[in-house]
Length: 285
Image 1 (cartoon, rainbow, N blue to C red):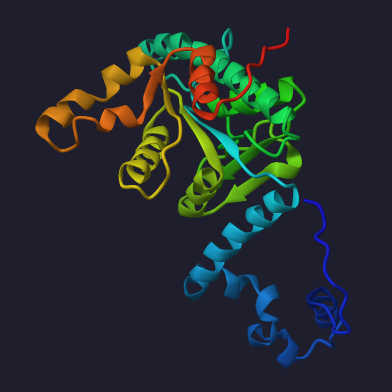
Image 2: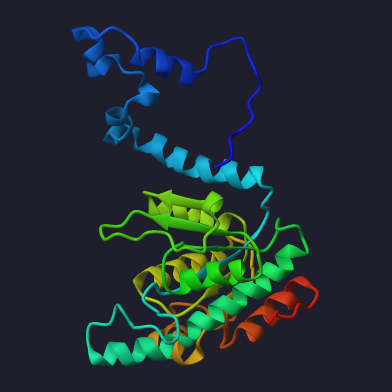
């Protein structure tokens, strides 16, 4: 992360005092946890009582960095971490049926990669300030999104999260735009804070959560209506019965109009292009 410019003042900085505290003579008093500077005390900062402070810090760190780089808007790609690149093993499969289905779903890796290329070529013409690709920074569809941006030399963002099982960021996220989160809630805020497009590819619980969070915010007027794309008509019609919800009266009959189901990157980007009156772009190679 690039160093932040600060106005020079005659006052000592917090970094100077941390260094000075480390040089203090070792006595029972200086060795006590009570004596630690509050902002340099990991035990204090990770306590239950400072949870609100940690929420704020997790919001501020990415926010400052994105502002400094002048990133105004993003194209968000959500989708399954378990979907492999075409031709690669379905590493997450637990049985033959899952293996076959995940390998079939690998076509969405290519569609996510191409969709990210469309977004990134549009972003290039705008100085990489708008329509910047953002994903959860992990494998599968997320990797495909960051990879698509990388294919055309564009920066992309990764909002990773610490999970019980190791999930390192994929190799295609721009290192200076790769962030790590503890709280899902703050991560979700950053996903949608600058979103001009949200593209949902086939996935599991996490993808469903992200889709319904976005859909609920739009439905309730808490978020302006933006292109919300569901990739894979066959998958989504099988997984969620929107007609049954409408027939039951638990959603409005026109609520399914809040999103658009598409099958290809070209089809999806055409929805975005027409919504924002963007110029056409052609994929390279």
